[in-house]
Length: 598
Ligand code: SAT
Ligand code: MN
Image 1 (cartoon, rainbow, N blue to C red):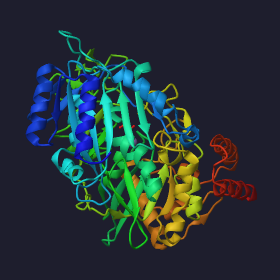
Image 2: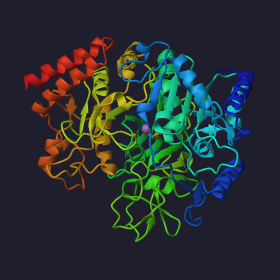
Image 3: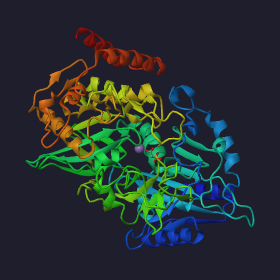
């Protein structure tokens, strides 16, 4: 959609369809956000935390059924089914629109319709994209105000004639005359729809108020719709953190990392190195839009302006920068609440108090069987407050990327780190990524390994084979030696006792150091069947006491397990259909051959 007139027309149409009580245009001011928050506190939708400890912070509790993304209810409604590919749910867009029209009809009765113009990317970036979300959820407005640049800054660009993505959202719970509202209205599962229309470049989300289902700038726009735009325009929209790394000599590197939801992207993006003289600064923790610069290198911008991070497990030890960031102006969702109005969650590094109110609003004591915070409890917090934020995190043209990490949670098989032989081999590594499913999605498969190419399985807005082809095509846009080096990492290997072998968190800087040495060509590597790997001695392990045998184990190729892996990768490729690029089958064959040679 384009232009102010189209926007006004669309808002009017939706206002009539949904029968909202009133329409409110968000300007993005601090005053507006403060008033909205006051209103939500007054209505009992939100609770203010202790102003002395957590100024400007609120806590929300979701409905117990509405706690994470819903992939089964997420649709890519492309004109042709084959364009959605085998990994997406597809419904004919005409049919889906009819269903949605029925659902949105009167869905905002008794509620305010908020219009949120928003900008994904720095407002002065030529790579930024505009959107307008219509929602009946004030919680969504408050979150969007943190996660994106909302209001007049975005409206100005729309008024100047730029295209915008219309994003329609309703919690799907109209209020009849005199009916009392609930703190977290939403619709039952079979009425939830998270719908993307790739050709039209529009989004329609019904029935859920949570995270990626409702904050439509995030996964729906910045990944599903943007991946389609990126394919058409020749760039990349990816589920990746972006970090800036400085070595003791002051040399700077930028690294992107693709990891599935709840696999530590936020922690890695804010890592505090445990090795002397190294520094990590944060550019983004979830999404990276990468364009080819005039010099042929890939440059990344973070389209978001906040972090929607997993609370459980976040502590002074695991992520001190996140802990400092969330101290003010932060929205907490589904954490536990202490008797003195502070938040608490499992893995916060603070002993559980004798009494809490759990995420469902019930009394909780350390004897309780259930967790006090939901495993997917989240904080929504402004990036600008992060002590590790890179000074140039809003650079309009982005930062040049030196390395791309791919990885997931795998207790076995995948070594700590290996480097690809070539760009094509690196894309192969991204395409075979597997990870244990986390609580970031409502699923009965939590804990089971699923293939998740570039951590984009739930976020590719088109055919997965075409998506992988778009990655391969990078070598036609630039010379291979200008492209980032690709590394496959796995921080999550476990020993026989089920304990993690690698300490992770700040110690991941040791792996990052090896990666920069590989970029600079200052350290040799062992050539293995999988790729280039460090020997134990090649890693800087100063000050670490680790079991050498276990370390060797996570830096070895287990031929038997890998031959099984090859079989499973073959099946997974077959599942992607005939369009799968031949280059990836070639890589699989070459891998099998190398494995059989050792
Ligand atoms: O709920 S979100 O999709 O925004 C979080 C995630 O799964 O990464
Ligand atoms: Mn994510």
